[in-house]
Amino acid sequence: PVSGPGKLEVVDIKSRQITITWEPFGYNVTRCHRYNLTVHYRYQAGGQEQVREEVSWDTDNSHPQHTITNLSPYTNVSVKLVLMNPEGRKESQEIVVQTDEDVPSVVPLESIQGSTFEEKIFLQWREPAQTYGVITLYEITYKAVSSFDPEIDLSNQSGRVLKHGNETHYLFFGLYPGTTYSFTIRASTAKGFGPPVTSQLTTKISAPSMPPYELETPLNQTDSTVTVLLKPAQSRGAPVRYADVEETFQESNKLISC
Figure 1 (tube, helix red, strand yellow):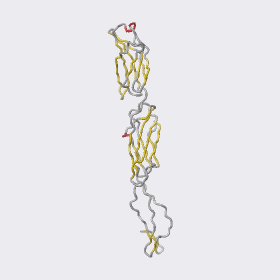
Figure 2 (figure 1 turned 45 degrees about the horizontal axis):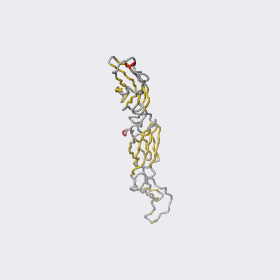
Figure 3 (figure 1 turned 120 degrees about the vertical axis):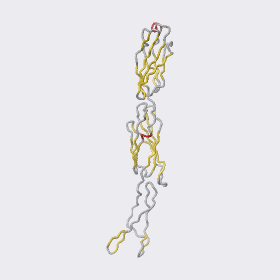
Figure 4 (figure 1 turned 135 degrees about the vertical axis):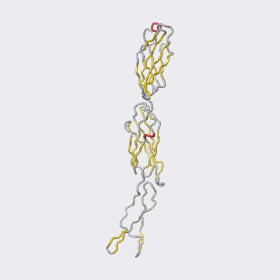
């Protein structure tokens, strides 16, 4: 051939394919009626360079083009054309194009870790293994699914949090003690959210709280007994199983505890 294909351009870019076009050529370029045109391209995948070539059959068209498929999103691809006949070969200039973004893969389940407290959970995670673009947002939805205290109302224990793409942690507070929460995380690029992943964590059980007691008149009193009204303790994550009662009385100007 006299020269390689000219005016190599990219006319369409998608997340997993690109379409190229070039200047049509005739006998004055090929110098032979028998020739073929191959598309050579290379890109990085999984830390290794992938080199491919495909034969283009669209050589007689006045507007020739070729679509390269099965590419990875958000990846630089180097492309050139090689024109060959029985006498030799000529190459076009090499161009570099980046495929478009796509939705990311799932956040790794094993990366979701939590530090649990009585009314708080500190949640951490890692970005998806395949980001397929720039992570712009993380969406975390949560809800209470069960509690050690069967009488607690969990209907208002749910919500949704959005975090910037460079933030992979969040402190949830105002939670109920002794309660299991379900956390669902999704990552997003400019193309939208990827698939969700769900993990569960349980807050720690808290000691029950006692209502305030003031100096009150006993319900009944004899020479050897005193009857008082006990107010129920407020459970915090688990049912109250029993209560300790401490008695104090004064005799001969001495305070005795038992």
